[in-house]
Amino acid sequence: MTDKETAILTIAKQAEAAGGRAYLVGGCVRDKLMGKLPKDHDIEVHGIAPDALLEILKGIGEPLSFGESFGIYSLKGLDLDIAMPRREHAIGRGHRDFEVEVDPFIGTEKAAMRRDFTINALMEDILTGEIIDHFGGRQDLQEGIIRHVNDVSFKEDPLRVFRGAQFAARFGFKVSPDTVEICKGMATSELSSERVEGELQKAMLGSDTPSVFFEVLREMDQLEPWFREMKALIGIEQDPVFHPEGDVWNHTMEVLDRGAKLRDEADEPYAFLLLCLTHDLGKITTTTFEKGRIHAYGHESEGLPIAETFMNRLVGSKAVKEYVLGMIPSHMKPNMVAYSHSKVKNTNKMFDEVSSPKDLILFSVADRPVMAGDFKFQGDRDFLEGRLKIYQNTMSEPYVMGRDLIESGLDPGEDFKEILDYAHKLRLAGIPKAEALKQVLSYAKKLRTNKR
Image (cartoon, rainbow, N blue to C red; front, side, top):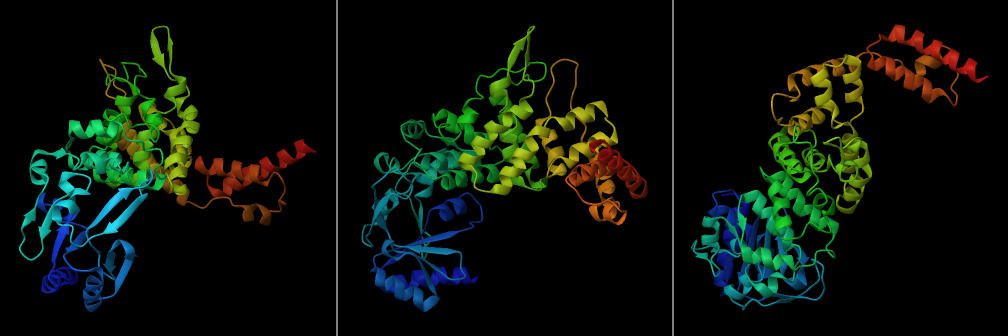
């Protein structure tokens, strides 16, 4: 028995000895019934006073309070939350705007009523293993349904809109029509970006089909305000030769799901999937109809400010933002160079422009179009990975640096960056260092002569 399991059992036994009862609650019960190994364990202790619970915890380890007035504790060193049953009443529109009243004697039904969905309102008696199910959660688990517990309390927390969508994506469940309807009327604008992004991350990293997250939000009329750029993709037509799947929304959702299958190979899985989500935002402003054909010229660059607005609204990590915004302008290049078998210097330049050449190749696989008719522009992953090895080998060779130029008698000046940029171009072209140094010095001499 692990330390956590021992602590759980000890809490339950001592709670019983004090006249109370301890239950596992929430996601750990749900996951166990789904045949999954729970990552987190939450305990709810009924029938004893808060002071008595605290004394029990002190006898087991070092209690840590996450809100002592709310009756929420953990034990140091254990991934275990211990709480007392409580009532919650909304006093604002944010996820944390609640007035909380601890009531150890409220009973299991009223305690479970504050939960969001029936599958999360299940309880398990720790000592007997009995499942307490007041709202039909077991049946909803069996039928694959996300259903809210209570009309009144559910609407008090707008984050539940996104929680419902990410559960549907992760578990492959359907959201109950009644729950969809109640979500349509919930205002989410007052939520913090951290909370919304947290639900997005769970869907992106925990689902084989993260598109479900967005499809559910679309069904709930909840793409705005947080995902308004995605909503703008709906109905934007594409050339059916290249995109028989339909509009830009359909294409983006397909790319996202193909990307999810490659996620574990990526250097930055979450950022990679955000790239899949945002790569074609430029088509919002660039799509045109010319001579019976649909075009989106320059969408790879025109999409940058749109993607930046989206990322600034939702994404907290500067590194993730830089990754995505740095990759979008190059997102079409891999399949193009693979199709044309471009020269090595071109593929070297392409890989050098992005933070993760490996992920750029993976994206090209996710973005690979399924062509109509006989024309097949499918890219070539083997070709691209072969060229990536050449690029990596090229970058591992000695190259001209600033100190080499100074040692050769070139004084630093305002034009030094321009000269080093030229040296970098020679490096990408695979020119050996000795020859490159001669060419750079010659270039610098001509540059400075022309400026006199």
